Amino acid sequence: MATATGAPEGAVQQGGAANPEPFKAAFRRLASGVCVVMFRRHGRPHGFTATSVTSVSMAPPKALFCVGTGNDSHPHLTVGTPIGISLLSATQRPLSDRFAGKAGPQGYDDVETVEGPGGVLLLPGALAHLSARVAELVPAGDHSIVVCDLEAAMLAEEAPPLLHFSRAYHALAPLPAAAEATVAKPDVSVERREPALMRR
Image (cartoon, rainbow, N blue to C red; front, side, top):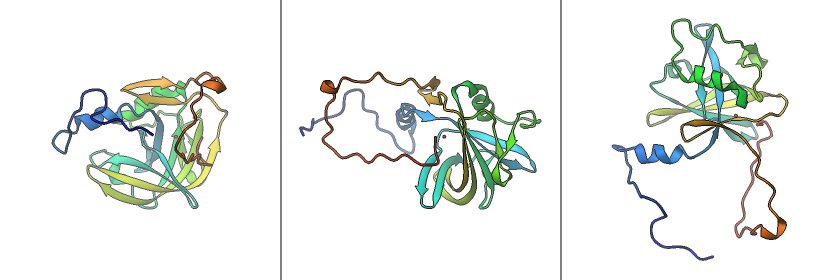
C-alpha cells in the first residue's frame, strides 16, 4: 500500500500542556453518543452529561467514563458508589443540556427519574440503561477515569440516538447502501467490537 509523505492536508497546529486548543479542536470532530450519569449526592439526585462512556470489558462487564477533578460531582464518586447511566435518544436533548450545567440550589429534584437495579437513578425514555458501581478511580491529569462494574442492562425500543459533534447535537441517519462493485476491499484486518451490554 502506498504511503503519502509530508504533513496531512490542512493546517498543522502544534499543541502541548500550555496550548491544548488544537487537541480540543481535533476531539470535537469525534462524534460521540450522549449519556447522563446519575448518582445520589447527600441523598438527592445528582448527575452530569457525559460523552466519554465507553465499554471496557465484557468478562467481567466493565465500562468507564471521565470526569473533571473540578467538577462538583467528582468528590462524590468513590469506590462502591452506585451509578445509573442513561443512553439518551435524539428527543432527550433538553436533559443533556440540563445535566451539562450546574445543578443550582434546587438540584435535580424536578427531573423525572426511575429506580433501576441496585437502587440506581435512571432517566425514563432513554435508549438503554446501565446499572453500575464504581470500581476504581484512576487519576489522569485534570480528570479522573472512573472504571465501573456493570451489574445490569435494560434496553428500550430502538430509536435515533443523541449524538454530539463539533459543538452541536445531531441525530443518526444511516448511509445509503453502496453498490457492491464500488466497495473497495479493505487491505487491513479490523477487529469489530460490539459490546453485548451497550445499545451510551
